[in-house]
Length: 81
Length: 314
Image 1 (spheres, rainbow over the protein chains, first blue to last red):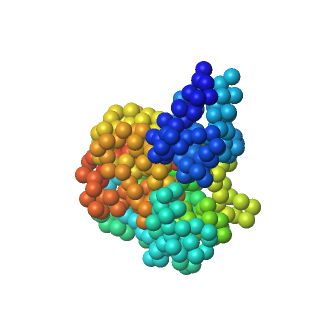
Image 2 (cartoon, one colour):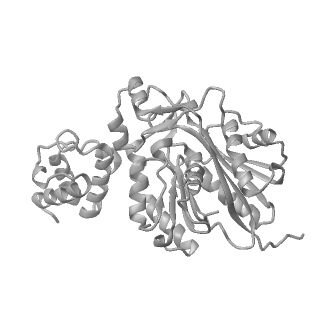
Image 3 (cartoon, each protein chain N blue to C red):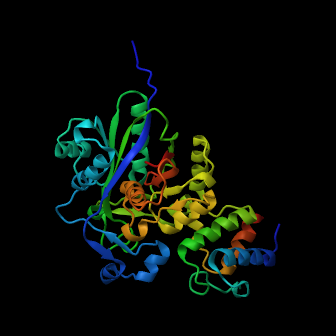
């Protein structure tokens, strides 16, 4: 099971591949859409990649609550428990 | 009881298409709703689309797409024994769209309408192939025709930028060798694409995008496998023109490395059941697909429904 830091690093790899986000920008307080310029469709691809990487399920209804990197790290952390 | 055991197979021998004259650009739409050219190009891939005039209908556009396909097939309208129209936007249930097309063409075929929304052309093509293999038909005219502009809420920026109008037609005739591979068809029943109480089309964009980018590539691979064709052998991939990012994602996951990918959405928008025959007709017209080469068609959309098959290029 991944720690919060490992989850954040994993997310950074996904974000770099799908949306060209620089890994250093992936910090807990950064909002996906407003700060990292990840659009709503790329967000879907990020979620699908995160599901595979962390072996979890993130239903569509929960995706809209994942505003910041920190939200996503906490969600994945909890989903793995 | 006796039945006929045929040795006949369906084969697409010619295509045609029709688009309304009026071009609607992203800039024109951004004067109507809060959107802009860059946003639309980036999210959906559309640069412009064609919108029908008030006098144009699903039937008139379908009729307009037919002559070129018939001429290229060397057939007269009266040679057509079966007519199948795929559409989800025809406004008149009786007589059905295919009977009204038949009236215009002056013919008396078996007249069938199929509504599986955006996947309609692949369902209709399978029905044509099956009718020929069963001995019920020899020459089938398959039309996909849509006037989405009738059901667009022009105040809704999430849908009015996507949908458009047009028609495509394919002539499918009996052949001694197979020209249409086994269909894979099915549904993932859901209301994520549908009609509002005011009869406007809506879709839950993110959910549809997720289904399309995760669910379709395995279906596309299965279709190739059932036809005995490797994805790398495909000369072209013509999926429903829903969204350029969906098209490119599925093409990448499929591994159709040598295929020309249909990108007609850029200049035609999403025309539902018309998008596949329109895109294929134009690709053949431009000489992008050699005759006899394998082409993967993949329809998907409201229902959610999907259907696809490998066909040999006319």
